[in-house]
Length: 114
Length: 114
Image (cartoon, rainbow over all chains, first blue to last red; front, side, top):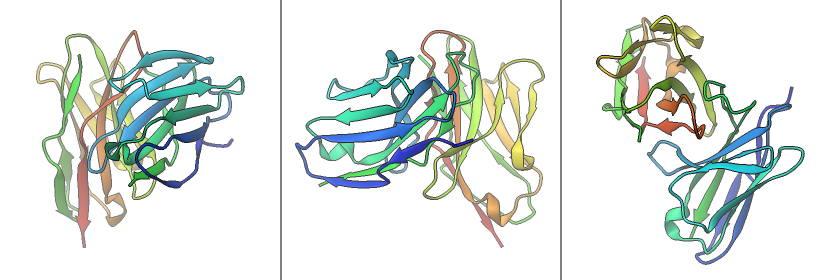
């Protein structure tokens, strides 16, 4: 059984650019959540997708957007990058929407904005 | 809204000594509680979770936590730590209905000393 994978591992961008991060969920999982983890902080919820539809969003501006594909893989897109967007971006997959279901996290993508 | 407080940013402890990592939460509704561990350059791994039932929860790697509703706490304990337990530990809550997302604390860095 393949776990959650994310690509790329590291990424360096400049202010104003756009970036796309990718996540492959664990086999059979139809729910994907994205989190931003700034240095020295806990992960913060960005949004969640369930069966290709957004199912909840955290306190992030609209320039953070996402997609979930029929195979339940997902993308996180960030437009007009700012320096404060530098962080570790974590993807987590789970089965269904029951809140007690365990979320399985990928290793993350470290984004540096210069 | 929910919030999680991990008062100790760093906890140094000698090998084979006991340790307690503190977590307090605030919520006006029922929550589920989780502890995750993050090793350097890795994603988060679930240690244990409390959904209902017995307030003492046992997890992986010899960790346990006790849910105390009156004190709104969910402290993590281990009777004897190993060097390999050195990592960042995150407490998280999720609501029991509605948007399924985790609210994380800022983390506690456990450093086990030889």
